[in-house]
Image 1 (cartoon, rainbow, N blue to C red):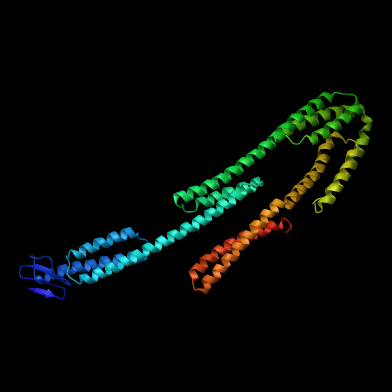
Image 2: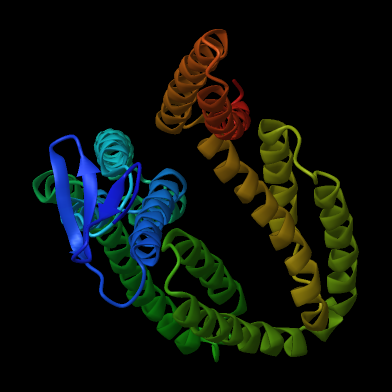
Length: 409
């Protein structure tokens, strides 16, 4: 018979392991000496030690799931409980019990982390919904539309919540987007209707202009053309393609008439040349108004220039497009400045910009306070994470402040 501190082999070749509950049969050995039998089952024990060590390392250093870890633990526990190895089996059970406690602790940590992540995602989605609902009332069609598309991308990047909460928030989010799209569609449909009305009105003006193009009643017809031009300006703009085509016909009809008049009154060529000189001087005077720095003064000055322009007679036909385009360029620049001023002084846009700035400032202050508390508590990891988020909020705040400066405050 052969033995060691943890087991023995009797005369029949039966191998035993010593436990706190007494000896347990490990197996039978007939192929060699008792020492070889003990060595064989001790190696099996060493194998269990290695497997448990590997599992401990996996639990500590990898993202092994609690379910898979518990399955592996129970598999090893079964091998230990079946007593097919010689060694300190009680120590192995203690290590497995300790590992169970670690797995359970990890399970609770992951559960808490998942709950925290879910809460953060819920908060983030609620913020997206709130912003989308605010944007739904916006009339900044382009910028609000772009922002809503950006919010959708942000939403897609957030984790899903429980089905009920996620569906409810998505319904509100989707409803806000739909409401904005519906209002924008209605707005542009209204613009289309206005442009269609303008097209019909201008078609009538073109028809009359073309009917007058052959008139030789120079004075009244020229006066009527001036009235038609005023009516044209008052009619509003049609769709771009129709506008360009109708304008070409309208101007073409006038050109036919005035060219005929020019031919009849050839002696007026000199006068028209003089008119061109005067209009070139007025165009140069108008161009000095650019860039517009004082909108009110520029508008008044251009009105005066335009009145003098209108008081001047026709210029040679081949010079007309170039000289008129110079005046039109100044007029468009002043109109653009007027639109920019209106947007800048729009109280609703100002209020929205100020509200967003206030919200971002409050968020920055709160995050700064959280960073300070985390650092004071020695929680460097949390402080660093909050600091990164703080940097992002500060960048948004800087952008919002710049946008608010455009409103003059």
